[in-house]
Length: 395
Image (tube, rainbow, N blue to C red; front, side, top):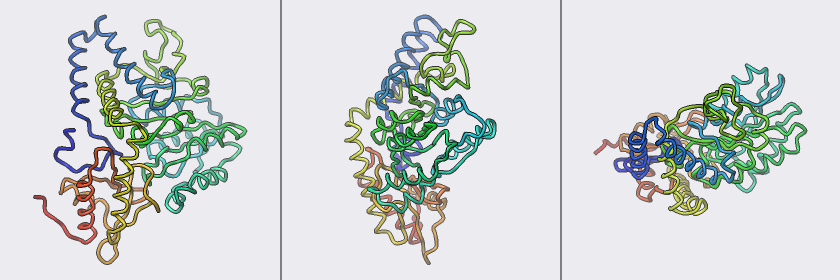
């Protein structure tokens, strides 16, 4: 991976590095399209081949049939396009987890403003920070029970929380919603889950399971997808509409596709499909989802335990994380909180890259199957220096 040649990288939850083979696949795909086309009858079979190839691969990871998988640009579009096409009524309530990404929250707020919907909060953050993993599912379900109302029409909850790194019991939440008189839809932000943990059970349980290819799948930015439930395909209409939404793109007034493709819009970058498909093949060659998760956990647990030995370091979770996201705070001299932005900058000067988060104000480092023990040692040493107020000049 070219991106890993000159840095110690822990920002997989923001963007994964692109493997060399995926870079080459993107370049080769561009060349093939130019040589065959770009707009000729000879190029369409190749475009269909690459689009179908990545759709099948993503659908397999989600454990759904390809007709339930729409290709999108990113998680946000995967959430918004079907969300805004649902049949809302004024007074319907959206129940949103308090750890959801600002992009999802903003989309729900604007939808509420336009449609006269109410927004309510599902508290999970403090549960995650104070509850042992073995008891977290029961605690989340209890919080859900307290938060549901007769007007609840949709629940938005991430599979793997982007700030605490906690795993949410999506299948159990879906089962509870199935008992509600209104059977609310379940929207799941899977930005941090696909490529890092087994996704099929949650994707099969959700109505909207939106993900991106550029984080844990280590694909190119600009390509993601969303797995949609059969009932959502029956109930939702497209909102942003283009020729790819149509069953017959050449006929004015054509009906929508009868499957998830109705939520696809128009021309997109096919070489990205080639790149992501290659990245997914490389992940599969590295082991099953369960095997890869064990490797991710081995490194994240090593980091979590290492943080316990740093004076002033405090992990957000009371136990080692379920996947690769490790969030923590630091205290410096005189037990004063370390400025997280300054800490990121200081580590970056040593070519060690983590990130800061706003809610809660903390630092986050991510481990993947590519993470090595020497890299973890370098990060822990750098954090020790930050906590101790030592600034090392880059060599």
